[in-house]
Length: 327
Image (cartoon, rainbow, N blue to C red; front, side):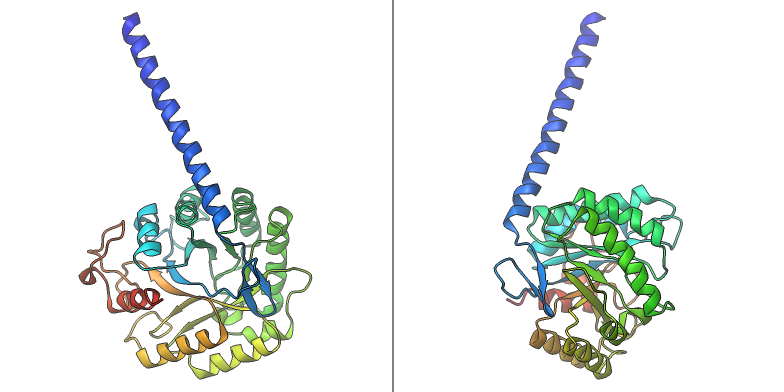
């Protein structure tokens, strides 16, 4: 009996040793990957690297984590960054919808989001940690971003998006909330780029341009568009903001109507692509999910780990993939 216990103890010790070794190796790999990726900064209206070169990031957003957790894994990150050529991946922390959202199951949400972010670091691409909500939840957001900033302090891959899409809140309310979250992050992480949302689903960028947040560096403001709903008027409004010196990041966009459904307006989508290219604006397409709607890039037949054939993707997924693969 004593020999059996000794054998079991030896096995447990070996498991512990290899488990710790794997964790240490993974951490070392992440640190090495992070060191190779340039730290981002904001100069004027432009996103730049440490050498002063303008940076234009193009990538995709995962859907709400609580509805499509099956895609929140390292394999999809490997595939999207490798085969698709995504330079930035947006992990959408679903805050307050469904019983599996962050408010009710924070550990589940954090595990989903950090799995994507950690894999992005290992794949030498940038990651946006997105507080995906339409409601002001300041205290929960402060706690969440303090945890994320502590975990990723000094890691150049990470961008923080503090409020996905304000809807009914005024710019005064959104600004006050954003300042509090920025303070929380900056106490821990002084340099990372922070994205600030605007009222009315991130379309009222002109309000932020007329009354921007001051006293902090590396802040950008988000615009979201769906090309079959938001046309030249939103580009004109964003041009107004750029003209006033406001840095803009398109952290969510797609080619159909704002509901996420309906036909893809390819002509208007191309108009947006041309406009963003001319202004060196980064963009992230919505979304890696398999909901029965146009903007969800995948079909239910798609595997949870990438390697998607055309028959596993909707038209929108193929359009985004093909655009990202252009170099």
